[in-house]
Length: 417
Image 1 (tube, helix red, strand yellow):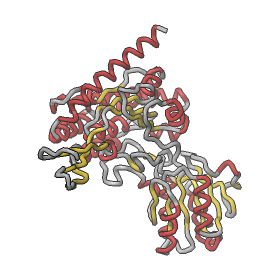
Image 2 (cartoon, helix red, strand yellow; image 1 turned 90 degrees about the vertical axis):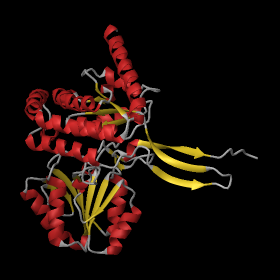
Image 3 (cartoon, one colour; image 1 turned 120 degrees about the horizontal axis):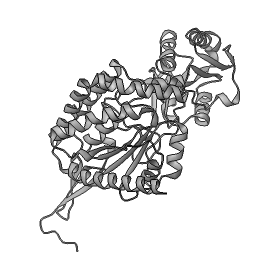
Image 4 (cartoon, one colour; image 1 turned 60 degrees about the vertical axis):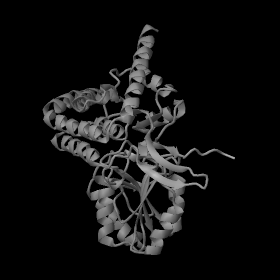
């Protein structure tokens, strides 16, 4: 019981400091937040060796835990990935500052001038699993949008996250901003997560990033608002009017570029008219690349079962099905999708328009790999997650999506009749 009390007290302290920092950040000049991110990027670049050494400890821990190859890939950092973290921090720093932006302005007959302006959400809690780069992405986006953030990384990425967090704190110090603006929970104990989920009045929104188990737990138990997606069950539909070479290239990338990310394709749908030709060729391509294709209506690695559809594999496995037409593809996606990302491969404008109009996933693509479902690829520098709900934020959650708004009203002695 004493340990639980200690964690509750620790988290209360973290929360109190975050609220104080949030109040200061909301008023801090844009150039200070930008300077903090630029300094953090320099610190990450200079600290590459230390971060890789910390990551080696996490990889050893992951191997001992028996993490899957996809999870180990998410966990691993090397020079290229650290370079991407540095680039992401710089990209967020260079973005237009959203805080105080006038979204709309109008005058009323009463003499009032009304402005709707962006304002930070306050304190954001981010709970994530094995991807240490989330430490930098979340910290950067929350800072850019004037929010304080409490980061709770997974036990697998404990050492890597600490090393990256230290660089973010260096950036805050260099810019004269409160160090408590970006805090990392210093324990692997799951009791800290429970404290965050019920921190009503302290944390304004929770963002979970991880597998179905983590996100489902957060959505079920959180007493504060949640931005989340439960799974990335992404579909690629090959229409009868698809360009064959483009389709082969796009499907291969959508499945194999990185299998462990939420934008990886998990189901291939093929129009019946091209199933025996282009569809079968794509299946052969995937199998030649080492993908296990669980197919219905085509010759795959093995026949598909009902359980293979609506499943997030996060591995070199894909479900495949022949559909009668575009409406069959749409019906399948409505039944089995998770409202994350779907792509249509077609040269038929009418087919693409029907696909876009009749599906309501957060991201819909035409002739592009689902692996582009990423805030960085959307020009946001980074993302804190992909939101698949319909309240407040949807799709990649960048700095702008981490703001709300308030109304500023000016009058000249106006009184209401």
